[in-house]
Amino acid sequence: METKTHNRRDVYSIVTDRIIAQLEKGIVPWKKPWTEAGLPQNFATKRPYRGINVWLLSMLGFERNFFITANQLKEIGGSVKKGEKSLIVIYWNWREVSDEDSGEKKQVSFLRYYAVFNVDQCEGLPDEFMPAIPKIIDPIGKCEEIIEGMPNKPTIKHKDKKAFYNPLLDVVNMPKMNAFDSSESYYDIFFHELAHSTGHPSRLNRKELVEMAEFGSEPYSIEELTAEMGSCYLQSLCALGKTFENSAAYIQGWLNKLKDNRQFVIYAAAKAQHAVDYILNVQVKEKEKEPEPVVEQSNEKEDSDLPF
Image (cartoon, rainbow, N blue to C red):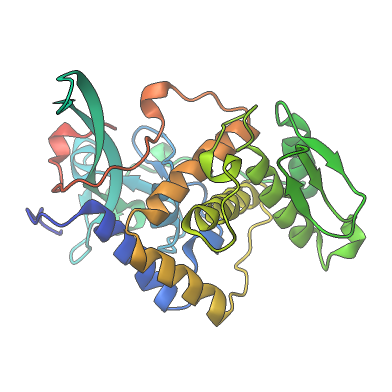
C-alpha cells in the first residue's frame, strides 16, 4: 500500500502531469470511453465522481470503475493487495479570506486531493456490495432520449451540410445522419454542438462562449475542450463510447495547451460537467458544483477526514 506523502506540489500540476503522461502515450483520456467499466463512482457510497475525476479514474483502464478509500476498505473488512499503489481524487475546499482593500470577508476555493484504490486492487470485498454496471440495450434510443429531454433546447435544424452552433441565433445545425460514416460519428458531433449551446446566456452563460473568443485563443480552446469532454461523457452514457483515433497534431495541440496552463484541463472538465448536468437536467446542490479554479498549494488529506 502506498503511504501518504507530505509534498507541497501544486495539485493542478499533479493532475495535469498525469493527463500529459497519457497524451504522450497517444491516449486522449476524454476520448477513452468508460461505458464497459461504468461511470467512476465510490464503492462505499455509490456516489459518482465528477469533473476531472471522471477522466483521471476512467483513463486507468480498470474493468470496473469502482473506487474506495483506505478507511472505507478497512471498515468492511477488506485490504489492499500487496504492491498496489493508490490513485488520486481531487475535491474542492473553502477558506475565508479578507479583501485587501475593503476588508470584506469572502470564501475562496482551493484544491485538495486524497487517495483511493480500485476494487480490483483490493481483496476481501463482499460480492453483495458490488454495484451493477448499467447496460444500455438501445444506444440510439438513449441518444435521442437525451436530446429530446434537454431543457430549454436551442433550435435544432438539419438544413446545411455543416455541423455548427450559432450562439447569436441559438441554433444547432446538423447534417442528416446519412452524411456521416456511422451513427456514433453523428451523435459525437451532435452532442458536441449541444454542449456548446449550454454556454448561451439563457442557460449557463459560459464566458468562453458568450464572449466569442478569437479562434486559437485560450478561451476558445477551453470552450472546445468543454464541448469535447461533454460529448464524450454523453457518448459513454449512451454506450456509444469507443476509443477514437487521434492524430499526432491533435494530441500535440492539447499537450501544448496543458503545458502552458496547468489549470486548463481541470477548468474545462468542470465546465464540461456543468454542461452535461444541464443537458441531462440534473439538479446539483450548489455546494457540490465545481467552482472556478484558483491556484493553491495543497497536500494529500487524511483518509479520516474525507468528504465522501
